[in-house]
Image (cartoon, rainbow, N blue to C red):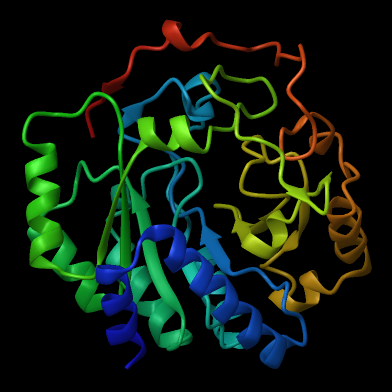
Amino acid sequence: MKKFIIKLLTAILPLKWLRKLYISYAAVIFQIKYGDWKFPRIISIEISTHCNRTCSYCPNVVKPQAARLIKEEIIDKIIKRIGEIDYHGVVDFIFFSEPTLNPKLAEYVKRVKEAAPKSIPRICTNGDLLTYEKTKALVEAGLDRIYVMRHNPTPKGWKDRLDMLSAQFPGIFILMDIDEVERVEGLHDFNGLIEVKKHRGRHIVDGKARCQVHRHVAQFTVDGDWNLCCVDYGKTFQFGSLLRNGILEIWNDPNFVQIRQTLEAGIPATPYCKKCTCLVERGDYKDPEFVPRDSVKHKIVAV
């Protein structure tokens, strides 16, 4: 029933209303299950560290990570941790990378769904590698949603292929456009590392900039660590290791609680936070390895 409702709502509602509806749903469920309505609505697992594209607005182009796939003992432990709390939220498989480059993606989706049957597995992808067969395998494994972002350049036939897949799998696909996202919402510059045309603005609540990222997503790295946030590309700070501690144990750790409270009060809690546009206006700061946007050639590299 839940899968049917998700597909139906995806097919008929605009994305902004889907988000609002899910935020309300997650707040109620997590208050009941964990006694905390602010518990992360998304758990995102970094199952690979590389991408098949170079984009000027992605830090993985300026400071590339070595190509790695998550080790089996690490994904095993993370999935076990998700099952331990019977997670009802979204489970994603990304962190500045392309999830479809991991050949075990469908297997991981299936295992997450088995460990936490009421979770909502999804992927965020550039769509370059999606075929009917791959999409079918992912949906049969339990994938509930596929967010596809159109990047530049757009290969010939890309849009037609994605439109066809969306029609073949109704209620699964949400098609987005990076140029439209930047124009309307803006993009992160990752503390002056890259150049963007429009900065994503501060999150204003009650007249003050406040960071509520931890209500939104828990970012787990390829090494099994709970990262500072989904914007901390350099992995400058970790709250704990899923290899040693459970999700609720890390979440309720006094240090983590204090950092969340500090950020929600609008006070930068770590050195990285002090330069983040979630809390501060972008000034003249630039990362020493800053790369101007027009110096990065957008291309699709060989897989």
